[in-house]
Image (cartoon, rainbow, N blue to C red; front, side):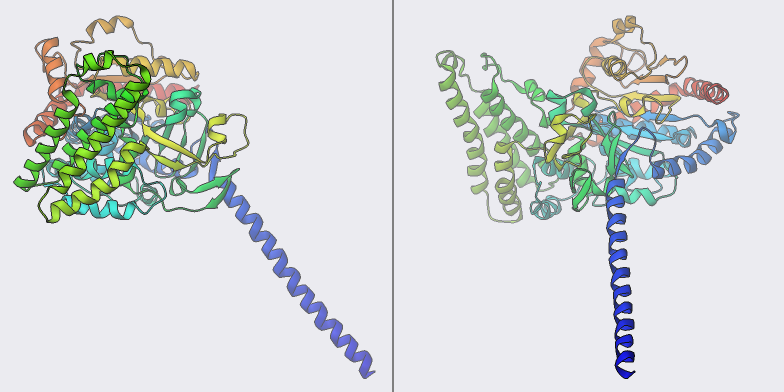
Length: 581
């Protein structure tokens, strides 16, 4: 009996032990399945808004409704029109003029009618600048005053770079981001965009736009446009998105392999506003003596010069010391003289291989000139900062790498994903203005179902170009776009201050408002002179020029207040027709 009981006791303990192990095993399986599900859900493949954006928009509509009613625009909760502001690129010109435009919208009690703000290139700098303040849309006076305030000192920018240089994907994007943030927008914003996901709906929902570089140059249109919001980041036309906090983390076939820190707003500004990363921009700085066809090696030489020239100018904006500023001016002259001496006869006499060797030596010569200049500086804080910058920046310029980010679509098995995105562990995000210099693509189609797009235009180049490019883009991806009469191109050199391109059915109406126009320029020549004065890469602007741009943008909005109100009323009617349909 005792033996039997002993066996029975042993069996009971064994059964309990087995049961415990089974539960642990089942729990492990459940956890594993849960992790797999969570991993898969981090990539959102849908043409609908993600839950986070939808919830924000639902809350934001309550504010929009109140604003419309305050403007005597009758509207009910279920008929709130979807109004987006699509901002253009254009460097500091675009950044400052957008702030001026939004300032006047607030003064006209119309800023709270916006559901969305989308930006490309320079306008994303001002968006990042504004959204650093959770209450910015009711605090535009302070935002304007900061633009003319003191910049960030070089030492602080270098300290951020020192930390960033330890990261795997440190590139020229980081250099450009910190110098534009510190020197132009007067702040170093170390927060993360995903932090805005938990904010209330006080401000319009922000959409920041970029391009994937390889797809932009070689791939299908569907792989080009990339957008980043507080909740998601991804490819607009592929409808493939990852949680914004995981942009830069490593994935393999949908699964999260390694979580990486989210990029901060400083680096994100470098990604979004780095037109210098594309070779086409270099053509604006070709010296007169370079009278042979531009090939890869001459392009490399020019881009080394161009990025050095711009980075030196931005560095100057972080410095107050007259001696240091004088030294930077001396360096600019050294590089200018190096590039602009006449070698046309020599080039004509060289064969392609000899020219290649010559330009490679010239590129190294520019880098060496910077190194020699840096070594000649007197010991002190400025030389210390310069030494760090030359050590970090010069190799990156020769490597010419921008916007490197881990690819969340690596080995993603889906026929809609281009091969160039499936097969590469990394992709490169660059300035969206290189494709369309205004944020139209993010507001086309049924996903955000926009009724009215307000489009203040600060782009350089031919006026209406962004509209025509967006129309062509919409046609290619089969999304509605309002009719554009090509006759308006006759006014491109001296445009009116406001145009309305009315949407008839599914397409949104667009209010298009050129910065320089017939109301503030007496003729086409003055428009050209203004664009030259406020050129995209003529950085940074003086306080006088900043104030001029602010006032110009404010006046444009103020002069067209009634047109904007009229189109808002029509947008309510459009929403009513949509809902009844």
